[in-house]
Length: 487
Picture (tube, rainbow, N blue to C red):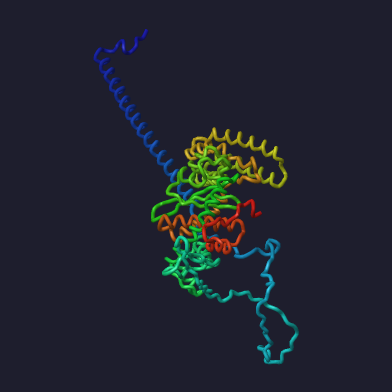
């Protein structure tokens, strides 16, 4: 019977074999330690790269949101090849055909007789018929100068100086300040600057070259400041109207005051808008205009300070949420979570549209709202492993109670904050032209006059008689009636 090799081997041979095996074990141990070190190093590099990817994705999202907060870009990118033909489409797709209608009032009539001879061959010309062409033009405007002979007297009893005032006057100033701008000129300057964004220097040029009215930019500043003081009670009344409205839409944008960053807030309803230029973008700044105890529906974007209106009923902007869905789908190739959220949000909008067209009852809308909330809640619980998807899911979890509030009253509550964004567009244009205001007085003047002008535009009124009434009043008055009384 054969014996195992280790039984027959000599002692020295066994010792040599054991030493060899120990060396092999030590080599393998060192290789294992190196492999562990390499694995730990690769794990650290992977974690660092993942953090870098997450940071870059966050920066990309922030950059995209900042882009949407700005005005529309001047270019949409690379032009299409070949570009579409400009103008309307031919045939049935042309749309409604229209032309300038003939004016109802004619001030001047001129004859255009036939020439003595044909301009083509020199032959005699025979009259066949007459046709009429109309030309509407602007009149030549020159300043109308009013002189008020103001009676100045003294009270026989107390000795108080007494001064007369004509209803057409806008100021009681005399002496060096006796030359005043009339209400029509001030109203035009206010509209051009605060509503249309025209710089003061260009307004000065326009008044001088087209109206023959000489004024300086500083003179316009003082005139608009006086107009803002006269409009202060109206601004206060508009603020109270906003605070008492059943639905208010809010938004904000950056603004400069004395070269320092401020924020221009817009609070708007279908017939009233109030602007407020505040030093910050927090809850206290918004509450200064809207009131901290606002308890009605607040339509806004996802900016967190809005959620501190704890007594309000919130509706978050679905357009912002859908935009984030598109960003995740196209830029981050997120094909699981974002498309499902997008589908649920769009379903909610379709339910609203069907209700407005009479295809769904109020009860059907309420049932659909409950199903949509449950579906969205289930999707939020499973965002997947993507960092941007988890971040979006966390935002949706916070905003979930405010996503489908508009389905409670689809005809009254908007699903987006488009009203406030539209109200901010004139301010964005003005900001690009002049950058903001040079002083706190200028900021206050801007918010008062811009609020009054925007409300006038919403209510389809004429600014000229309203500002004329404000400027000619002996004491500040409220010029705009409440919305309920102007219907």
